Image 1 (tube, rainbow, N blue to C red):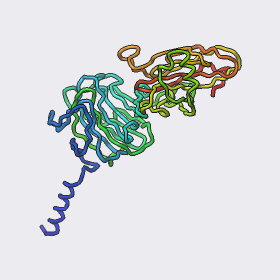
Image 2 (cartoon, one colour):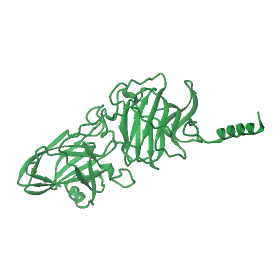
Image 3 (cartoon, one colour):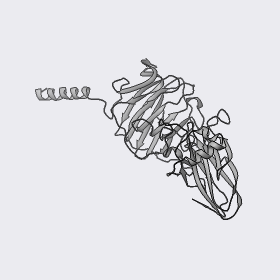
Image 4 (cartoon, rainbow, N blue to C red):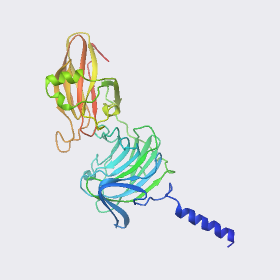
Length: 371
């Protein structure tokens, strides 16, 4: 071998072993490459793999921005309720971005996993549900589960256990923008191993997302107030003051043909007090008349017509039975006693988690004009 060839080989080896991970390489699970945020964790060899045993935490990839590509990792699941998964294209605070995660305790059921965005700190699983965003799958509790997520501009797919065809294809929720990458653990400890990120592999396979049928006749636009404390709704004197003290000017629009997302314009946990807003619609009636209004909300609502409270309800997670998700839909209705001329309908919507949402319609719009 010539001296020149020997030098070239040595330089190649030196380059290969001194570079950080590339787009094609596995990423070691260590504190050099990951910011590990957890109640506790342990790096160990488990079931044939170098893994992390992580409790109530996540791994955030250091000094990296992810836009398009393939994310792969292995999970050793158990039957405890937990929600491990991947969070990508995240903003600096991980309040906004794209997600796919597992509901480990619901193996075999249609909602045993979930694609959903994070929007201003809320993951609205009560909004993005059904076969468009989840699929039934029988999880293994005695072996590793392989997860592969492929991201390409405004589209994504997930493949479980080396499936040739995607288990789920969906349209992403935010504008394509490079951001942070997190592999998330669960509420109870589990093992994660073999994390790979390939920014050059973003080709989709048989991309055929399921489309939901939109609900016809919905109010398409709501005006939203600033945020205030829910306790102001508890008595009539405080209620009038709460209405009069509000500022306005934020508009939300129906998405998915289903509901309007309040968290588009309000940040629930920004350090300021309150978890409630008014969503407002003005109804012009050509005469005094009674009209049926059907609506949906999350998590709680007080309906106020022309300053008078007429309805109070709860639709939060587990509010109706232990499996109830609090999903949005036209599940409630009230008869509105409208006066001739201008009527103001306020829906005071309070949120805990899972989706800050409002929707509604008049099936019979004769004699009405909305703005």
